[in-house]
Picture 1 (cartoon, rainbow, N blue to C red):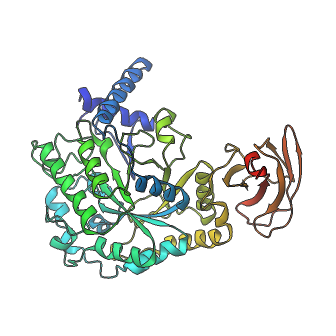
Picture 2 (cartoon, rainbow, N blue to C red; picture 1 turned 30 degrees about the vertical axis):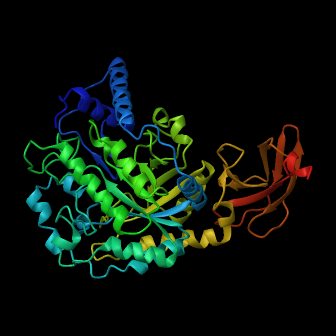
Picture 3 (cartoon, rainbow, N blue to C red; picture 1 turned 90 degrees about the horizontal axis):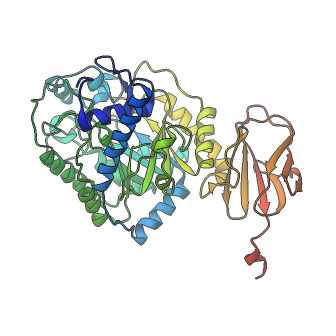
Length: 483
C-alpha cells in the first residue's frame, strides 16, 4: 500500500489517520507508520477526506442488518451487560511466541512461511482455563472476552474450514476455546469471543487493506470467498461452544468494500438471539450491532465526530491495556498502577460504560505476575465499593474535574477522585437529598441543600484512598410517594 492509493480505499486510509490525527494509523493495539510520507492535507483536503470517510461509513452501514429489531432475549442481555460493568480481555495466540505484542507479524513484516514457522513451536502446556477464569472472578470481572482469531488469522479453536489453528498446526493440539467456554460455565462467567474480520494470512482477503501488505501473498483473491470463510468460522463459534455472551468484532476499519454485515449479523442473531454484537469502531455504528465499543478512550472524550448519538444509545464499553500492549510484550514495563486502573473503571461507569481490561498471557499460557497483582487489586477494591459500580448507570451529574457520579434507584454515588477541600459543591439534583453517607463505613456526611444545589462537607480523606464515595439517598419519585 502506498500513499497514492485513491478512491474508497484511500478514503478509508485517510479516515483512519484523521481518527488518530497524528499522521499515523492507530488501530487495535498498535501504531502503524506510513511506508511513505502521508500527503499533507490542507483544511479543505481534510474536509473532503472526512466526507469520503463518512460516505464509506454510510455505505458500510447500508449493508448492515437493515430493519433489525432486537429480540426480548437480546434486550435482556443488553441490560445484563450494562449491569456487569467490568470484564477481562485476553489477547493470546501464536504471535505470543515472539513476545512483541499482537501486531508483531505486521510490524516486523513477516512473510507467510515465517509466520507459519511459529506454529510448531507453540506448545502452551501451562495454560490452565480454571486459572484464567479464576483470575477474572478474583478481579470482580463478570465476563471474559478472548481473541479466538486475531489479525494474523491463527485460530485458537478447532476450526474445520482451515488448518491454520492450534489443533492442526501445533504440538499442543487442544482447543483452548472449548476449555475456556466449559470453565466459564463452571465458574458462572459469561464469555464473549473476539473475532478479527481482518486477516493477514488468508489469500482471499483481497484487495488488501491498510495493514498486512508485505506477507508475500499473491496480489489476487476473492473477497466474497473470504467472507464465506469468515461466516463459517463465526458459525462454528456460535454452534460448537454453547451459549455465548456475544461477538466482539475487530478489523473492519482496515479497508472499505461490502463486508456483507447484514448476512453475518442476521446469522448471529438467528443462531443465538441473546448474543450481543459489537464492532471496534470507537463510536461509529452499524445497524444490527448491540453494543458500542471504544478503544482506550471514554465515550465522548475524543473523536467526538465518531461518537454518534445512535452509538451512545447502546450499552457502551471501553477497552484498556494494563501496560501499553495488547499481546504479551516482554520489555513493556510501563504498567499502569492499580489505583489508575480503578480510576478508569470508575470514570467509565460514570460515563455509563463498561470497562474491559486486557491481559496478554505469556506464550506458556500463564498470565504474568504484574497483571495478576493488578487484577486482584481491582477485585479487592470492588469487594468494598462494588455497590457503587455494579448495576448502576451514569449518574445525574455529568463528569466533572473532581470525579463522576453513578446511580441505582434512589441512590446516587458521588465518586470523588480529585478533590481535597472539605466543601464540594454539586449542582441541583432531580430530587431532594434525604441523607449522605460514606460508602466505606456508613458514617454521615454533612450537607446543605438549596435551590442552586447541594454542598457536601467531606471528612478527611485517608492516605492512599483512590475514590472517596459518598452515597446520596434521594427522596422517592412523586408517583412512589403517593402509594
